[in-house]
Every structure is written in C-alpha cells, then in structure tokens.
Amino acid sequence: MHTQEIGQEIRKLSDGANQIGVRAHNERLILSMIQRHGALPGSDIAKHSGLSAQTVSNILRKLEAEEFLLRREPTRGRVGKPSVPMALNPDAALSYGLKIGRRSADLVVMNLMGDVLGSSQTTYPYPMPAEIFAYLESGMADLAHKLSPYQRERLCGIGIAAPSEIWSWTDVLGAPIDFSIWAEINVQQEVAKLSDLPLFTENDGTAACRAEHVFGRGREFADYAYFFIGSFIGGGLVLNSSVTVGAQNNAGAFGSLRVPAPGGGELPLIDAASLHPLEAAIAEDGLDTTALWTQPQDWRAFERQIDPWVARTGDALAHAIRSIGSVLDFEVALIDGAMPPDVRARVVARSRQALDRLDTRGMLPPRPEEARVGANARALGAGCAPIYAQYFFQ
Image (cartoon, rainbow, N blue to C red):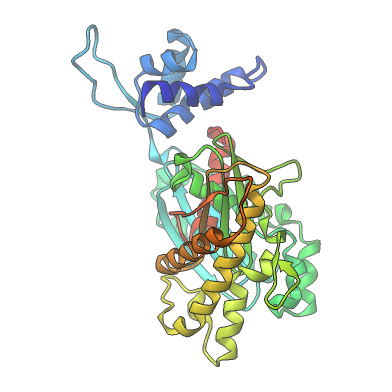
C-alpha cells in the first residue's frame, strides 16, 4: 500500500481518540496498523500515526514483551541505523468461533491472523439449546487438545454467531413447538457454565460480513453491501471501511427487503433468495438433503433443482440490490453463501443479468460481485469477534 493510502487509513483509525484510555487506544492503533499493512518499523508507525517516536518505541517494547509483536530482519540500505520491522505474533491471541445455523453448527479455533488451527461440524434437523451447548463444550475440549500449551494459554475468548430471533422460524424449519425455548435462553449464562473465557455474540450475517471484510475482498472497497445466502439469507453493511452494526445491532438485515413474487405481489427476500426453498425442492423430489450442509460441499446430485433456484435467487437479489443502491451509494454488493464456489458464481452472474434488465434511471446500482471467504464465513466472523473486540479497531 502506498504511503498516502496508509496515512488515510490511519486517520480513519485515529478518529475519536480521547485522553481516557488513550494508552489502550494507541496500542490498538499500532496493532491495527500492522494487522492491515503487514510488518512496519517504528519510524513508519510514528510518521503515519501522529504519535511521537518515543511513544511508539515505548508501546512497541511493551507489545513485544507481551509477545504480541515479533522482530523481523532489519531493513538496510537507508541512511542511518537499519530499521527493524515489527510483525504480529500469530499465536499472541487465539479464539473459538461457533456458528449456530438452522441446519448445522460449525466450530473453529483460530489465531490472531485468522488462520484456522482446527475445526469441526455437526448437522441436525433443527438446533436445540441442549445439543448446541453440549457440542460447544466437547468441541472446544477436542480442539484444545490440538493446540500447544502456549497456544492454550493465549486463548482470549469465544465468539458465537447466530441468527437473530432464531426461535421465530419454527414453521419453516419444521421444528417442534418446544423449539421456542430459545427465546428464554440466556446464552451468556449457558456458556459461562462451560468456560471462563469471555463471550462475544453477533448476528450471523454481520459475522460473515466481518470475515469477508478482514479475510476476503472487503479491503478492496470502502463502502459495500454484503449478502450471505444460508438457510435464510442475511447480510452486513460496511461504511467508511468499517463493519457497521447499527444502533440496534441489526444493520444489513436485508432478508426483510420486499421483492416481486412469482405470479404477482411481493414477498421478503428471505423467502426468495435463501437455501430453504432449494432444500424443499430437493426433498420434494425424494432426495436426501444432507449433502447441502455437509463439508466439503458436493452438490452435483442436485443439478436439476439448482438451475431454477439460481434463476429465482439471482432475480430476487437484483431487485434487492437496486433497492439498496437507491439509498446508499455503494460501489459493489458482495455475494457469498453456504454453497460451492461454482454455484455462487452462477448466482452472481444471474443477478448481474437481472439487474441489467431493471429500470435504474437516476441511480448507479451496486455491481454484484463474488465474495471470497465462502461457506465458513460465519464461523470465522464469530472467531474474529473476541480478537477484534480486545486488540484491534473494527
């Protein structure tokens, strides 16, 4: 990244600093700079952060002593002493990330750089609390055994990504009436019974968006809409290079957007561009739907059902993207989902074709583009939450 671009990024990170907690702010600032731009020497950090060389030096020494930073080989060839780039220690902080989906749950343990060090998955007809928390407890124990003693000491939290008001989807999931027990569950208390690690929860669409923003194509764009097609479609919103959660933690709830229904009228995007209609079509044809949710994904047996689903989904997304673009001037709409990459590419291509046919006079609609992270985005986003909440700027 060019010097000018680094400076612009740092000014964004520095906004809102105050004297209360300024030391923690400056530490996060430096860690965030290195996370975004790679190993940097103290002189570059001081130049672009606005901090004095002495302040930067003191913070770098502190972070190195705490094993958050590692020294790289000195850079020679400049006038004066060689500069020493400082890089993040990948094992400085680790976290668990749990995605609770309508048909499957995924658990990962990841490090500060987003590397997945271990993962597991379970599938079910619908998620019940007792089974989910039992899976979390046993899954964390199994994954911890794969870590070194040092890595286990650096575990800093648990992130959980789940749909908002999951209990409200009883009918669509075909779940029994006691599925509504989720409305009475205090997730914080339940997880506290299993672990002393701090818990961070997030909407699953926002979590997936965060994973794309950190590990995928998100850094290419300052402002964009993000769609994740799971059992039910969700989304996220990025403004000014930051994931936006909104005043009620529900920004990017694109599933509620109204789109044309086949045969006339309207229906919510969640019923027009989600995986549950595809699942229903597969089941109606007498096929086993398990492969839809099993990793690694192989959907070749469902080709006859996929073609019409791609057409309906792409057309519905085009209407949703046009609506979003009339409110906010996004450059792109990134589209991802719990699907094989080739199916995602077909959905994006169809949405582009459909958008080209719509009336967009007076506006420049966001351009549909493929996201990169893929089916594991929600679990990775969940794992990001503890690390970003404690060490980086969002």
